[in-house]
Length: 372
Image (cartoon, rainbow, N blue to C red; front, top):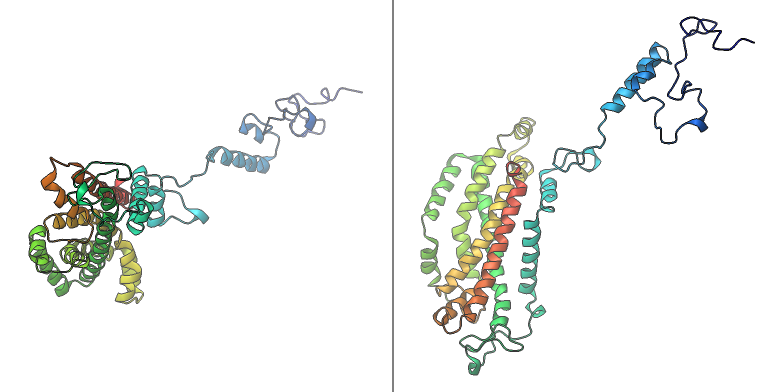
């Protein structure tokens, strides 16, 4: 019986003229190999994808070649959206707020400032977490004495515990800062947004009114306005800060609304018959609020420092309210004899203002794509 290889033609064709059979890397066609003879780590029967063309007809060769080409062109890993270019969960693009939160979670400045602010808010709400001493209970026999067991910060001129007053002083400062920021942001956003959206005489009136408030010195205005107020609560100080703080946010909101209302999606909604309230609330405001949030977050720390300044001058918060500004004012004349009276409340004020400013910077970097 002749050898099967001898029955082939001079060009390797079979006895009936069929096409020659290509041999794989193991000497046989990959389709004739015994599965037990293959290398278990060999994922493909071909070392070169072009070899897939030989053992098939024209149509099969093209299909297999295209399949191998797609496999080679396919990236090893799918985009994960780490840089904001890939879609989010479900294949949908991430929104501005989702992308901003994704950036904030990886920012150490945001994490540190957020934890510090959370701690300050907790002790402002529950100062008993850190001390059980009454900040208004004083003993003149311990006037200006240094630290001792149970009183780590020493005593002030009246013999009051400096540690207890520093802890309880966070409530007034945090309350003034948050309340003034919310009031100024709401009033400024409302007036600035309406003026920027409608324009005309309302825009001109807002601009000239804001210019008048910008011309009032903050400290001088506080001395004049708060000197006639006899209340010992925080609300007169909050009202004064809102009165002088809303023009800045109104100007930011006005410019942001003017930019947002010129976008194509707003013009498309207007051409479809959407009214002004719907355009302003559904399309313009959500895309114009980011700069307002950034400015308001940074201004919160400034408002806390402003309250301490007015209290230091004697026109802000007044006793029996416990405030860092009041304690700094009382400790300033005794800074040489008892520096501990000044250092602790001033240090607490500085850390608080710094935490809110750091938070504002982190939020600004996350909401502004140009800074990434």
